[in-house]
Length: 308
Picture (cartoon, rainbow, N blue to C red):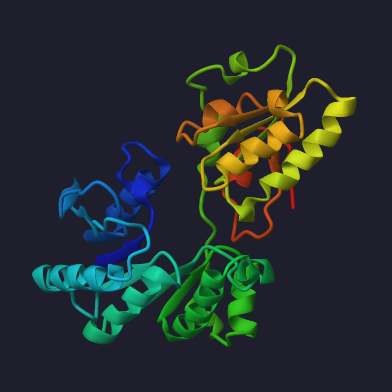
């Protein structure tokens, strides 16, 4: 079997990252894996070989928001399908979402007859998702159009699967509920690469968040909670590991609230084990979430979890 994957995850190009290791496991299960990667920034080679059977094809856009992505990705898909002789009876195309990559996957299905799988990693039907931005409202409408037209749908939670069957009326046999997997044993027995506690005040009680710094993750709420806690528990600190568009705003908010010395911002890293193992509690206050991989990871690392 040959699989054409449309992905948004740039981390598959990062050596030894969990995302790349997951791709290797996918590739080991099939004959060939071809990944078209939505990519903007410094130009990369047209084709990157990760293994003799796994290939990545960056779209190489100059800017993140580029309407030509769809056509460029579709042209790359045409070239792959023809060059590698994809067969509609044994090969398939899978997309990471029902929005941007889903549109291209549907174009491929129409043009070449390949069976289409759409993966749903986010609860796009959540009212908070739709109200977050006008773009999200468009995404919602696109997903409602594309998902019933897919041959199979992979949902990361039963909640999403239920919505697909009860609201979009997708037959249950087309839906597979498969959460994003964490290697629990590996996390439980992992040895930290460094002692993160050395960067904090002595005898601190560490509350940890690992997330993108976006509105969805509700970090501003966590800051309000910490402001209240610091009054009665001066040894409590909050460590936020992540990056994103709200980083500057959140740092300024921490300073305005007078808690900047008790809140530590750390740029995103794939070495999450060292931070899990140095914490006392894991905090997960998202406004909406498809699955939340960091929750089972934190539990595997031995942390109690407080989550919405």
